Amino acid sequence: MIRRHVLAALATGVEAGDDDAAREALLHTEWVVRRSARRQLERALIDAALVSNAMVTSVDPDAMRHVQRVAALSLAGNYDVDATKRDAVTDAYAQLHVDRAPAPIATILVVCGVAMVTALLVWAGFALRAPHHRGRAEHPMPWGAFALGGVPTYEPAMEQLLVEDLPQLVIDTDADRHGSNTTRAAHVAALRDSSVIRAHGSGLTIAWHELIDAMDVWADAPAHSHGYKDAEKNLRASAQHVSDAFAAIGLGYHLEASVLTDLGAAHGAVFAFRVEEVVYVQAGGEPRRVLSLRRLDKLDVTHALLGMQTEELGDPIVLLDQVEWFVDHELSPSVLFGEFYIGDDNFRRSGVGRLISRAAGQAIQRELVPYNGNRAAIEQVVTATVRRHEARHGYDNDRETPLRFPAALHAYIGDNQGSHVAFVWRSRAELAAYVSQIASDTATPQLALWNLLDLGFNEHHGGSPETWAGVVIVEGLGRQLGIASPGPVVHNGHLDRDRLAALALPLASQTDDDLRQAARRLWAEMYAEPMLAIVDRAPIVAKLKP
Image (cartoon, rainbow, N blue to C red; front, side):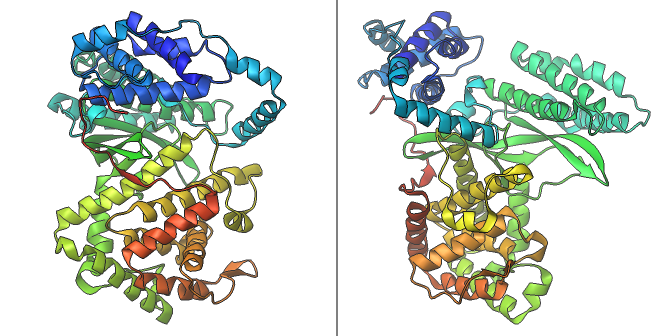
């Protein structure tokens, strides 16, 4: 049913030589299947670009026609055509019958089906509660490494613009917002007319102008004003539009906008990164692109996270600078002395803290023995496990229906109500991502577990989403592995870290395979569905396969 609508949209896109025309066509399909059709279209286009090795840009409509023809043939079940041969694909597509005006079967079924109406009401309630995520259908078609994986191309002049000129505009914008006299107007004029940007065509130029305009609006939006939230949202989205435009021309750069608060004052920043590697992972055959980023700008703000997957961000990301810091400062004691320090300083100095830090360190040390202290190899392993974690967020964000709310987590954090909504949704997201990470990690599941539990034993992070995810995971893994419970880990409204440690300590002696299997059973228990492990995508082949 959905496939017919996608094929009709692809036919429109083939005629226009433009994938956006296919997306536009889906806006006029049956409303019941529109969202699912958009998802199927995007997956089909990405897969087609991969198998055809097509280098697609907005100025090459023939290449875009080829990719859309390959996508249509794949959806129609024609897997015998060599996807890299344009003439063969064109001939096969000419033989494909496509109904350009599919009957509204789905709408008829909905009108006639009370059960479907009820399901839609449930969906509507979820849409009102769940955080909004921009659809991937809004992103332009990627090119080069962004379509196929690998290392993208770079350009010295663009890098200089992002390292020097853009950060200076960020500094000037912040000063202007807070009343300082700056030379911002001159910098705005120079950057708007940048020849480096204009050399790459209208797509990047338009997105770049939108970003500068968004910075103008942000500079004039007082905190707590009616337009403040819209200005912040627009700033983030505009930075992502520039990143999408870079991906569309295969240029390895990425921007991320953020609003930071210090002593009650809001500061907007746009961070610039080099995309060091593009990796496609998959879960159950569904591809997901993940970017490995290295910071370029010298703004005096650091990211504390190893990776991110934000509302506006189309791709999950791994932050390589933070991975390197983590390996140097957190993993080095594990490699050298068999210790992985858990919790805050007070807990680490306690008898229980020393015991559990030693057990965690030895478990991680066992996993890192094959790498023989090779720092670069260890960084690759950490990057891979963070990549799986962030990819899980991406998959779950795009689900048609959300994962169910595990009863164990619900008992600790309650329902989505009032200002609590964001906390609940993040707790649910982190629980799923960490269970999946442990279950999918082929090399370091113990590291994934104990890196999470470091937050659970840290009073400074008490009550964070990661804390409660850690509690539920330790209790769940203990249950799956038959580890006796010392009693309720949370009682009298407080987390008992001694009991949590007693339950977590035996986990350090589990083999990696036992830990992974226990995590998979825990996933099935919590979500009533089998867990699809996240793995790096197999090498690309040019032949279409089922």
